[in-house]
Image (cartoon, rainbow, N blue to C red; front, side):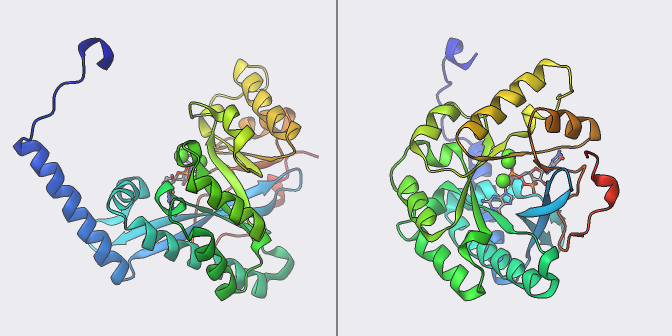
Length: 280
Ligand code: C2E
Ligand code: CA
Ligand code: CA
Ligand code: CA
């Protein structure tokens, strides 16, 4: 619709001024929150079927705001990306997640997940020394590189350039690369030809309406086939029901993530109840 009517010319207005003010204010609050230790990292299980073992966890950031309570990352990550604070926040998240998994490995042994998956923004990836930052976080935590995955979106790597250089450097370290929200971008399949990837995270939108018989299962299966044909691991995201889990299992998926298996929490239970091993 925007194309037909033409983009309206944007002029500076009090409303825009307010939004800019809000942007600056929230940016300053994020800065203060970093200094005051208000960010937390929570971990969501990525379950491997049929045993329903917690094979990995995804690290997700939370802001414990003293007044507003728990603030969703959707509300502050975009601001941190725009004002550049994501670089510092992202490094803190990375270091926290590496330390946490190193800790679980030391205390839980076999029960600890094999890997922690950390979301990385385009802005972080574009920095010239991103791989060195990751290497330092690994060294300081004592976590082996093979225990870390970075999750990047298609848009972050779409332009190629330094972001793709960084992915090659990370891979050389032994870090896994996961393509997040797979299938929602403009050139999901094309990217697989040029970008080093180990894991496809198939977007929740392909999981939402999946049932054993429906057309959504056909699409979910096609995405699984691409992934396995290329020798990649596929994680289905946003699995909320046993019915979805069963339909995904039937078309090949063995790695599932979603509220059905567990919400992101500070200290997940890695011994999932046997009831979760639905498929045998
Ligand atoms: P994402 O990377 O796609 O993360 C998955 C989101 O889906 C998470 O939301 C997770 O809590 C939610 N989710 C997981 N399972 C289910 C389910 O079964 N049903 C539904 N409805 N939702 C589910 P969250 O934690 O609010 O994060 C939202 C987005 O914020 C993330 O999307 C990611 O893009 C960004 N984000 C979160 N943490 C970080 C971070 O540490 N760094 C960066 N750069 N971005 C982050
Ligand atoms: Ca993610
Ligand atoms: Ca995702
Ligand atoms: Ca997403």
